[in-house]
Amino acid sequence: MENDCLKKNDAVLPETADDDVEKRKKKPPKAHRKKHIKDEKKLNAGWSIAILALTAVLSSTGLVFFMSGSGQHVVSIVGAVMALLMAFVTFGCYLMLRHREVASSMRKMLFISAMLIIIEVLTPVTMSVNIGFAPPLLAVLMIAIMVSEETAMVACLPLSVTAGVYANAVYWAGTDPLAISVGIAVSSVMAVFALSMRKTRSSTVIASSIAGIAGVLSYAFVMMAGGEIFNTYVLNLVWLMGSCLLCGILTVGLMPIFEAAFDIASEARLNELLNNDNPLLKRLINEAPGTYHHSMLVASLGDAAAQAVGANALLVRVSAFYHDVGKLRCPSCFKENQKGTNMHDELDPYESAKRIIAHQADGAAMLEKAKFPRDVIRIVGRHHGDSVMVYFYDKAKKQAGGEYEVDESLFRYPSVKPNTKEGAILMLADCCEAAVRSMNTTDMTEISNKIKEVITHKWDKRDSMLWDSPLTFAEIKRIEKSFCDTFDALNHERVEYPDLEEINVR
Image (cartoon, rainbow, N blue to C red; front, side, top):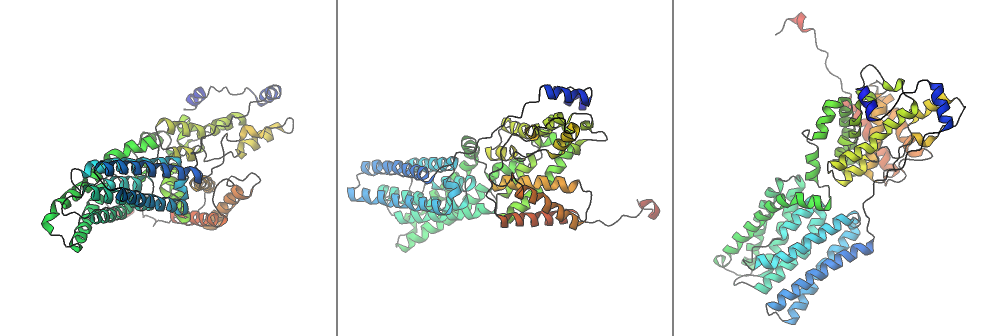
């Protein structure tokens, strides 16, 4: 295995340390070039408002054309447009005040805009078949799964207003436009509640069934309040129930397409990546079992810590599973996969550092090739930030013995510091797990002190790895406590088994 790794890295072992020192004096190694993984394009408030405003204009234009074609009065058209614009204003204010992380994400804003426009186009087409054949639930389900539940709940405002306006334009006999608006609003909220339990692809069908029942009941109650006879709108109830079920089925089919098109890491998509049947996880299990075990422990630490500070725990867990996948390039370069011999005892510290450092960029490249979500790739490509490999840096300084200056940049990861809570949590979990594992102790006092030492080093040092992350000091203390609690749970004791031969059992 070591020979294979040597070939892959095109490395030649130095004949002697003195020869290598002389070569380095004449021609020092080149510093690692920074490999930046681009951040997602962040939108300022102006651009977010512009995207929503454009969506509202396009929706209103379609509404005007439809109502004009159906012979509606100018006053009715103006009232409908103003009602729709008010719904969009409410939705926009909510995003800007309560969900700035959604409003500042270009991918999510474009996705929301695309879904709203698609539904605005489909609604008059489907409702011309029957007033109960309304598609807004499709957009609500998609937004809830791929963006957030809260956003989906408020997004149903412009959708339900649009449906009510189109119902008023079509105005089938015995149909109250208020009933269809209320039915869609209630069904949308109930669908989001049902999805909040678990966002998997199959659960969307269950959520759409619950939404259909809630929508049918709401529609019927409003019609009853208006004094309508049940026989006059029973067919509309059937169509409403059927359209909800159809929206759930279409969501399952369309979700992978929109996930790929907008590169959004939905919970359903992330859950699929946790499956051990994934080719990269299978390779870790078979080729780098020590790295796989380390990744599982890091995932446990990161998941609990993310929940403690309100970060995306599922994203942290998935990123932890794959954060060291770059070690597959040369598993025996890493201590957890070595058995007996350590190849770095014979390698020059510069070469050792080069091989270890490469796993961060290699991992990001492997995930990119496997079409992983950009959020996961970004975290994996920064899980060491631009930190220095202290062990080999110190080894190189000792070998130099003051005869020449050791270039610190040769031992620094060519990346940038994590700038999200999830990325920072994974970095801390990775460092703490490795540090605690190296101690070979189960004493919680020693473990707690080591965790505090590692986190303090990452936070307080001159070139802090956490400066670019949004974590506060209070959140870091909660992360530290969470790590201690997780290690305490992992270091449980077992009852000692007696000698089975002595007690003579089968």
